[in-house]
Image (cartoon, rainbow, N blue to C red; front, side, top):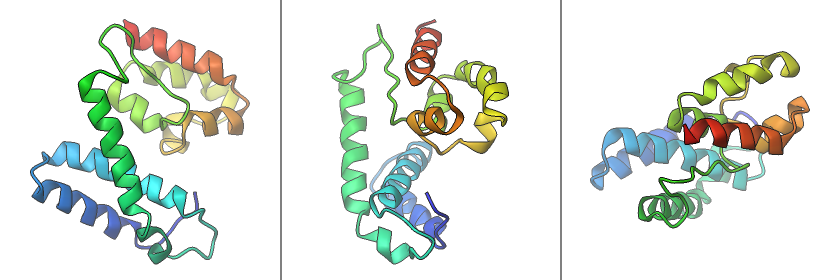
Length: 149
């Protein structure tokens, strides 16, 4: 995703709105970050993209993120028995949920030629695999095995 000036403002606005609606600040920040990123992705950014081009996608992105969050809390997408790690989750999503996952990403740093947690924190697992030539299925399997421990 291209850098878009003003996304910090949209992020702050989403956090403030969610917080004002009663969500605790940590949860609001996490939901807002995912929403902001998804809205930016929906805008199909180019170097010419302005923040106004992505604002229109915030409601759609927020609805999707809140829907996923609700499914998570009901156990219909996830369960205590089997953690889910999906290709469209970002490295940040995985590391924030499963602290042990950092070791898995570190294992792939040499192959990638960069620190994945440093350079690709906001990239999806699919994007990381494609960019750095990592077998996506192996990465997902390793992350799920780690998360089950």
